[in-house]
Image (cartoon, rainbow, N blue to C red; front, side, top):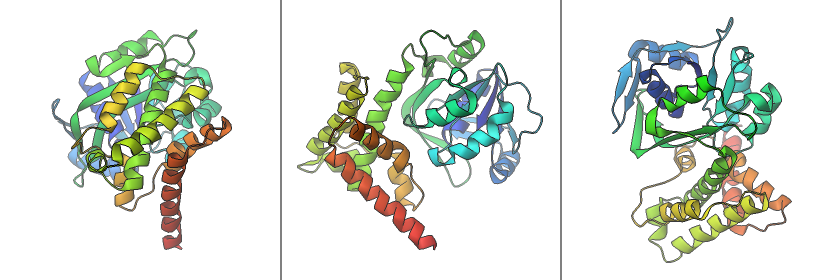
Length: 308
């Protein structure tokens, strides 16, 4: 399978490395500075599953694009428009696009650009960060890439499905990938909303008298939004999410909080803003979600003002 990955930071770099290990031809479409770093030092992954270090093919522009079976998009939501413009030359007649962004709002933009038949559903569960030296570090043991066709009547081509499943147990071909995306959407919105609003890890929040109940209420609002949108979450997924979200002593915090702590831009509109809008369309009052969103909007406005 021939794969183009937009971005080689964090998620894109990690799964790109694993695809290379599985024997696939992988190109990384990256910014010039990242391309220079990869040319000088190669792609380096630090992981409990096993480290990876080696040269990779990093390009900064697609002019005469070769045929790709799959284009994997792992950028931040606010970079989606530029990502679409950059990968368009790579999307040929037989190419599928696999987005690994959080939430759901990106699907509309990708469908408009490439047609819904070309855009798979996808999500991942992994904690990774780009270190100051350009290497990628994985935290914890969880590493999961879930993919599938969003239309039950359309099968994922064998080249792509077999190619992704060659990753082994970390790859899951879902028969209902939209539901899987909603399950993560409700979870990640709760995690981001709670840890950003209270500026602490799950363990720090649940150590307070009110913490566990506030998280449960926030998750209940997110879960009810999914339900009213026609995607009632399974009891199994709810129980697992609540366990993770209320584990005593857990160091877990949303990547959105890490962005906030370093003064970076966040995906608050793509995640919290979109779920809040969907809740409002269904006449659902979500006070905790609204508070978390307002908190992040104040932060984003202060960043914008500081730059003026």
